Amino acid sequence: MDVTIGTLHSAREISITVDLTPEELKKKVAAAIAGTSLELTDEKGQLVIVPTTALAYVLVGSTPPAPVGFRI
Image (cartoon, rainbow, N blue to C red; front, side):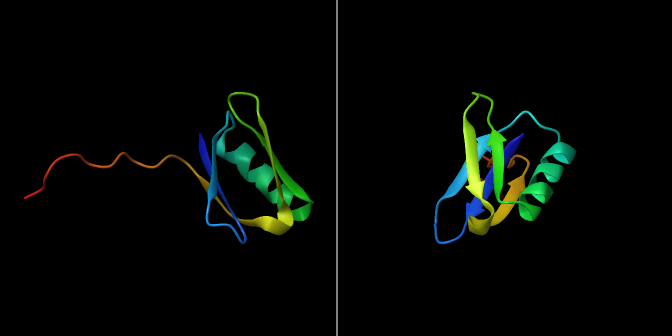
């Protein structure tokens, strides 16, 4: 599942792919809001830690591919 994390005071987003269900991810984000940081491990085993104070938003899911060609 694709996850995009927005942080405060930064125009760039953090985009990772995780092996979690939407419900597991929702629980991790809720726990992070109550705690000090959001910790996620991507498919390659890399750990991403975002402090809760810098967390702006979390988008879950993948974006549909852009259509190719012309519409009439």
